[in-house]
Image (cartoon, rainbow, N blue to C red):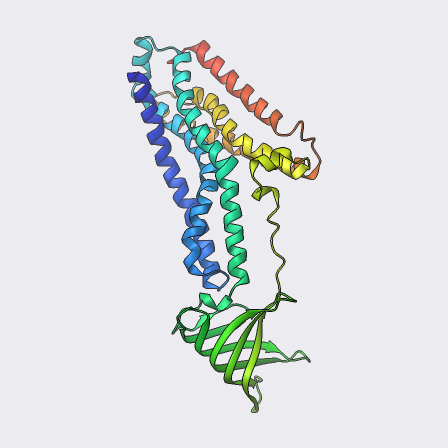
Length: 360
């Protein structure tokens, strides 16, 4: 038990460090993408934290198998460099025992990955898609910050002095936008209004900004004339109706629904979710013999080939998932030959390791 706790602690601590770095990089990249969308007014900045939180299971689903794989390589590689494995062999630790010690935390990580891939990831993806659709169907200008000029996309700059208490009406609105006349000539349009609110046309689904008590100026570049329109009520179309994402897509469906479905896309998605926890166990068989290094080589000697092996494994699974969804591969065959191939690689490596000796 002392050896088991020691080796498990080394593996899990290394895995946590690797997972933390990878998670920081991936979440940072996704946050920058969402932050750019918020800056363009596509989504309000207030929901960024919620979006990132519900994306977390999807990130962990992909990060944890790689992090555990690298955790075994780095932890055992350090033990080989420090000759601790040699001491364990001298104390009677067999190759099979070391493999058992590796598989026990691997089973724990596989269960965690399975919970993410089979339940949390699709639920989080569905929540985020619904949230984004809800925000896009609501008021675009709720993303505005009072007292600031902000680019709102499509050549439109907007300003509002303040919002009312329930954030549904804007006070002292200013909008500058570039438009084209019917003959194609460009024009700059500046609109000022005392108040404005947004609404959605129930028939067309288009969004409109309704302004009241204001003026609209139209200026053509190069001309010395301008048009001035004074209005009591004026509606500006912000965007046309966008086709909503299919919330019934397999990536958003729960695992029981996919299990009962018969189409290729559902089968492909189901096999992908089942592949994630299975990958953890197969990669453990590969990592344990690969972790053995010569003290002169250093602990990172086999890191690059191991990463290439993991990337090829994941790439083949993604390719096969696409082939199953398109009907090019029978779902009965599916991804299982890929798992069988890498399982065979792991068995061969373990057999060679046991034949040569754990410290040989």
